[in-house]
Image (cartoon, rainbow, N blue to C red; front, side, top):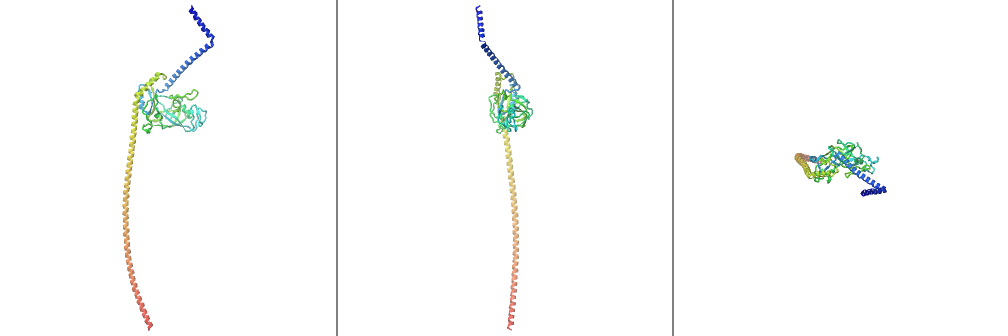
Length: 427
């Protein structure tokens, strides 16, 4: 009886306390209810966001592991990964920086038609000046749909002359869906020369990836002009710089262009995205998924990396030696051609020298002959002159003798005439 009376008094006391401080009681109760609702909502929202992200990433086949290498990756590396029982899909992609020529006058979509020549800031960053060029990342899309870009408008490229661009690229450049852009690949190979990160990649021996240094890697764009056929989101860089709900990822913030594999001519891949076979059954934000991926990565690093590093090194070494042998052969061929040309020149010079010496000898002989003829002709002339001179002297002596005789006769006649004249006077 007393126990029941005590409980009744206790309940009355509690009821009296509540009714005496009703406002305080209801305020505390409301706070508790709101706190419980907020906590439940945050828990449910976070879980829903993770589930939505999981469905989105699974739909776009986001890679679980991405293989990178400073020496470039080949189809043999892709085949080696595909043979692993843990791998569901793997495909090589080519990624590089490119330069896109800007139109003579461009406007930014976020600036209400203001000309882009005016230097100003927008949600997408500083607007580039009209004309000139802008840098963008160029990447090939996979045929297996790995890391497939999410289509916001239009479609993905299907031929070598088409491209899909991210909103970031369109905002920075002023281009729109349907425009034609001119793209020039830069000489530097960013992915082949970049340092290795500690996550999601296969480390290999350091090599600068430059073709002049002997790795044999090179690439070219098969086309230069691309039509923008789609606006997409890069699922590997969840970056939304637009609007009140903007947020940024920690990946490179350049605009991106997606092209088909036949738009690029390359003898290596810059990356291999890998989708694991059993990863789709695991929740990506769970510790179980992270442990599973870490186990596969450790296996790749311990069992596969050394084999592929050695194979790639030997391939590059073989290519370099073959290139060196080809260059040596080319140099020896050029040297042989130069030696033959030199010998031919020497022989030609010798022939011309012999021909010149013969001509000189023939000229000298001709000169001697002409000199002998001239001397003989001179001698004959001198002899003829002497004969004529002797004849002239003889004729002169004969004339003088005849003259002397006539002079003596004239003197005798004169003397006789003088005597006769004298005799005539005497008589």
